[in-house]
Structures are given as C-alpha cells and as structure tokens.
Amino acid sequence: MNEHNLDTYLNVPQLSQLLNVRPMTIYGWVHDGMIPHVKLGRLVRFSESEIREWLNKRRKEGRTRREVEVLDYEAS
Image (tube, rainbow, N blue to C red; front, side, top):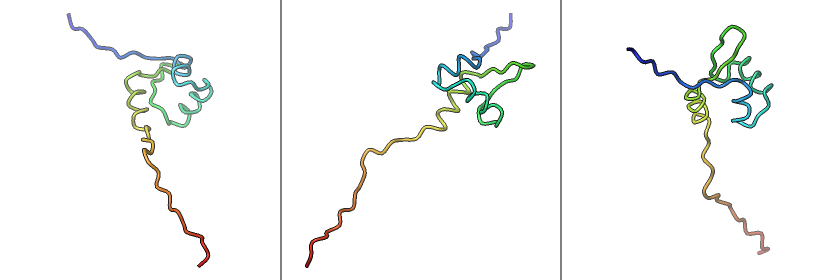
C-alpha cells in the first residue's frame, strides 16, 4: 500500500492562538498574500511546516551589544 505523508494543517482559530494574534489579522494576511495558505472552497488552511518556514524567514536577531558614542562636553 502506498502511504502518503500529509502535513498537519491548521485552521484560522488554531493559527490565531498559536501566533497570539486576532483571527482578523490572519484573514488580513491571507487577503494581502502575506502568509502561505491553502484555499479549500471557502475554507482557509495553513500548513504547519510552511508556517514554521515563514516565521523563520522573519526572525530577527537581537543585538548582543550596543555601542554608544560618548562625547566629551567639558569646556576647554
């Protein structure tokens, strides 16, 4: 028997909870084409692995050290 490896798909409420954003934000991203999704008729689903990749592409590294220039304002 040929076994298919299907990815896990999330619906809007599940993704909304996972990302801690409102469902309307998710729908806005879908409408603007900002987030990978699959349309099944009127239903919208999100591949968990594609969402993981999408998030990793948006990851920003924080600064470990910030250099500050100190100016000497003493009167000569």
